[in-house]
Length: 121
Image 1 (cartoon, rainbow, N blue to C red):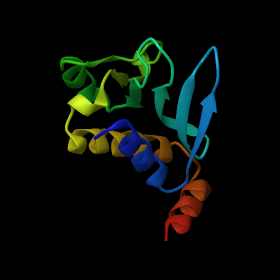
Image 2 (cartoon, rainbow, N blue to C red):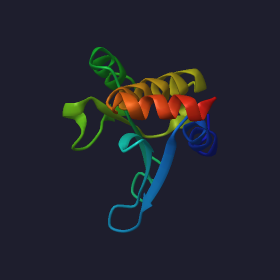
Image 3 (cartoon, rainbow, N blue to C red):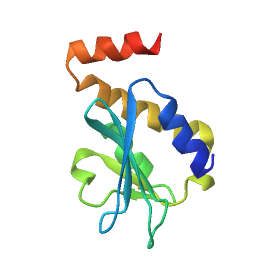
Image 4 (cartoon, rainbow, N blue to C red):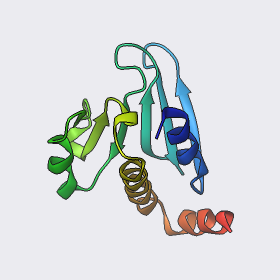
């Protein structure tokens, strides 16, 4: 899965918005409601580094893999950074995105969750 396909997959999920921050942050965030579920670094160094939240039980498993490390400043919340998403199976990437999206969605109010579910239909 390449970078554009990953961005498009994130955009295709219900209730998703994105926001890009310029220098000094240089980050493209994906949100469901007001909760982040994924982001890309958009400048050097590590341009297109992709970060997502994972389940606590998957955190150690994933960070033991080549090219996946704890996300800077966010590892205590079980976020990981994938240096080059093109080196990983697209099934793994979409599964991780779905998990991060569901975690963020579950943190929204029930009313907001229902509105997002209805907008998907």
